[in-house]
Image 1 (cartoon, one colour):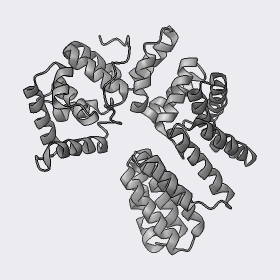
Image 2: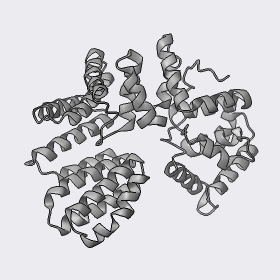
Image 3: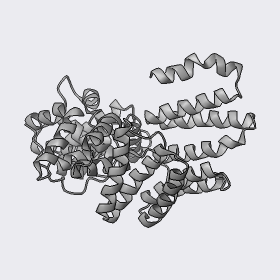
Image 4: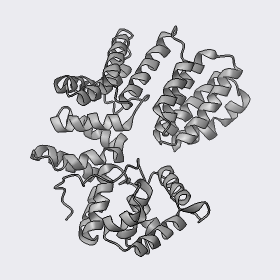
Length: 378
């Protein structure tokens, strides 16, 4: 908040005096970075539009490829299709500029990862790793190694995965760095951090990154790690969950929610459908009083984050369809959704609002069994 206030308010006279200057451009890019850190993607895209306007007006074409690559990344984080982002990046890049080419290749490798093309991603990442090493860009080298570790993890090349984690996390820990500023994909970084915890490879650094930078994104994996048969691993996962304030909500679920409701909410949290850090705010919004309405929270999770029909929600939660209907009506009213446009339109509007306010992290069909867990709820 302080950074945004400085960028937006305290520097406003400078931008007004020099609207098409490099300081104005740098401030727009700084605002983009701050908004990305807060995961406010529409605002970040608006800041990039201003940066592009300044760069174009000042005839500083050298910044335009960087702005285009940053815009592609922000769109990706906002949910744009990988293929569309890839096409936009290809159209914007200048292959003769080595600095932008390295960034472009890294970004394309991450798109390969998201499309499951691990061999293509490995080839690109190894190429950029050599280039970054020669250029002595150590922070970029670190970020590429994190993504390489993920590729090896997905390919089952565990020795190579652990080697990259050791080199990347060891350097970051020594330099007291808890993340990298560009191309930070929380889901991928979280998987690498969880593997570090599982294998006890610089686990203290992994814990710091999860608590400071990843939060809810790592909760599903942490809940799975908490049931690891190795006591040291499960205890470490529990300690991180405690640091993320699960010690407040999970015991309440265990004591007060009906079994079917409790199991559904645990599944939503474990799959990343519901945000743990926003659960209190959501409970206050949906509750009848100071006590959380566990049934309504569970219905909300199904309604806002899955494709379950009303009948399927009722069956899964062991509720009557009429009770589910009443909860859905309250949920729609709470989020300002009226009956116009039909049932499906109303549900889509609730889902969009839930994602915008970060109550829902991703939204996946909750068709699989609950993850096996020994996580204590008492």
